Image 1 (cartoon, helix red, strand yellow):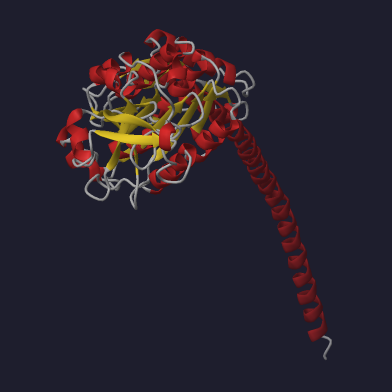
Image 2 (cartoon, rainbow, N blue to C red; image 1 turned 180 degrees about the vertical axis):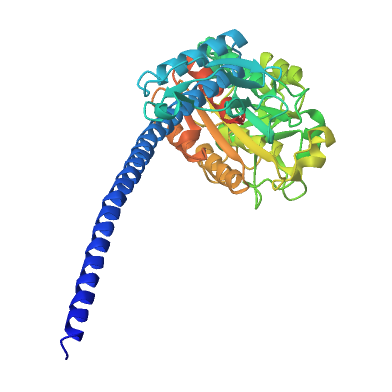
Amino acid sequence: MSNSVRPLTDELRSTTQSAASRSAGLLSRFKRSESGNVAMLFGVMLMTMCLLIGGSVDMGRWLNARDQTFSAIDAAILAAGRALQTGASQADAIALAQRVYDSNTKKRIKVVNDSVRFTVKDDGATIATLGQVSVRTPFLGFVNIESLPLFAKDEAPEATTAQDRYERFNREVAIMLDVSGSMCSPCSKRDDMKVAAKDLVQILMKNNATSEFKARLAIVPFSGDVRPAQSILSQVTDPAAPSTVTKTTGSGSKKKYYTYTKSKCVGERTGAQKYTNAVAQSGAYVLPSYSDSSSNNYCDISTTATVLPLTLDQDAVTARINGLATGGGTAGHVGTAWAYYMLSPSWGNIVGNAARPADFATEGLKKIAILMTDGEYNLERDSQGVTVGDSGAGSSANGKTSAQQAVEICTRMKNDGIEVYTVGFDLGGNTTAINTLSACASNSSHAYLADSGEQLKQAFRDIAIKLTDLYVSK
């Protein structure tokens, strides 16, 4: 390489190095300037992240407070709705709702501006929530959101009772009531039963006149037998049955004759349909009951203890309960059977159109049997309708005790979709009676035991409430 070329190369190298050095300086300064931008962006991102995290904490507290508040409101409005169903005034129901709400919010997350209160609307059918409640939001406060309401105005919960047009199903209820002699030992037991039964009727039928859905009730009084109306009696018993039957005891000179007269009541059914709801007709008639003509026949003299088929007439139901007298034994299986018959569509032609039960599979319908007794089922009849144990009488027509037959009938009721409630009143620990009622009930929650008149009223009231729809409608 010539000497003239080397200086040029060195100069170019020097110039290139100088340019690279200047460029490096510029890049270095740009890098320092970029570091400032990143710091600013990082600060913004950090603030946003903190706000999001803090906002999440606030939202978590809001959700927790909202859940606790809604649970307290639901409990309050349902309690108030139940109170209205059982005869409480609107003022008392509202006061109850407030007490329940206040009690259930004592341990709630701290809130502000709690003005929640309750009112009754829809002619007494709905308990509504008014007012508002909020929770503070310290983190969201940085963006001027100091608090959040727990629910919007149109979200305020309401409870709708089933005693008005909001009812969602029809009900057919057969109430079996024990009017045996022990119910008047003392007679305050009978009076307690009347009070409890009428309370149940009032709750179930309260708004039949205004509600789209109805409650039809049947009353089945029973003691040693059951007395249907004469128009029904003539259809369900064999027209060829004799007016009297004669029983004998002893032989030879010691032979004695006893005459029993056909009463206006009926006993059990025999044959293949003895425990079913098949219509009473030839081959499936109900046994007429026969009584000693020399003694007072409770069935014949107690005209007020007649079966009342399904009706919408609350006054008629109440009057039938008011008129109940007591006497006789305890043929619980016969009473159970007639509760079944009053709910069975196959008996429609017998009871007549007004009392005709709906089909079992009818949509929007519940069928219920309520079976009440104060003792062990202890009376059966022989194949001729005479009480087992009477002079000359034979053995049980169906070869089973009254309690065993009652359970057989209950099983068939439940298989047909009938909901069965049982109420034992002042049973005194009788295990046979308790076990019978337990086996008859749909489940353990449907079996009640009451030792006093107040407990009996509470049992009937609890059943009525279970059968009366009440729900959080909003």
